Length: 78
Image (cartoon, rainbow, N blue to C red; front, side, top):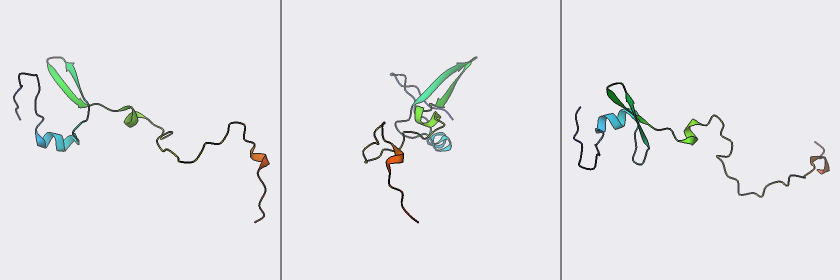
């Protein structure tokens, strides 16, 4: 596959390549020089790299105060 470099240094990634690698509009792309060629990769966002999902879901409820004592809750009978 071949494409042309514009006067602004831009290229169009062919549709088949975009579809194969799941590249979407607005995604960040990283370039690396490896020997005598260029490597193009979809840059991973910090959200994609995270192992934990902590903090990804937002709650509409108020937070529990830091000094809340769980022992003060009433015990319910089964």
